[in-house]
Length: 185
Image (cartoon, rainbow, N blue to C red; front, side, top):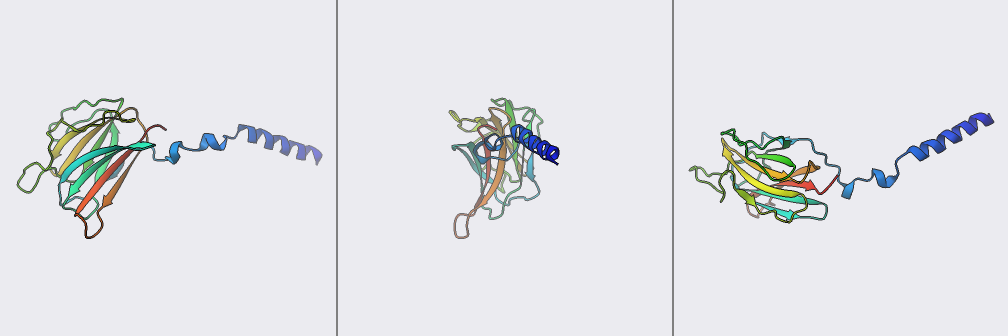
């Protein structure tokens, strides 16, 4: 019986020494997002993409894409790709950074008359991200058959999350697609 108790004690001590410490298992800033594709592609917006902007936060960089005249969440597909390819033309658009995130919004960037609702052309920098920790470049990929693309050049393949925000009733009828990319794993 004593041998069994000693063996159990020794095994317990060995397991405790081999187990990771709490600090090693704690994710950076509590981020547990991962880097796999994220999508809700089939929710189309009746309103167009109207703007894009970016912000720096303590643990991540944020890209916000505005969709006007819309009170419902808008669909999207966001994933790391080997190369950012423009829909319609099939042309590659090079991005600065070591990893490329392709963002497709289920909303056009043109109005009912076919006129652009944004101030950029395909291949233009849509947002200035100079000095950001993670973002290297935000490029407008264009709008084709009701979908709008952005290419996000990132420092490395890092965890990201996607959120959809809808304005509260009584405020402007707009939604926002928010892409956060962590500064590190």
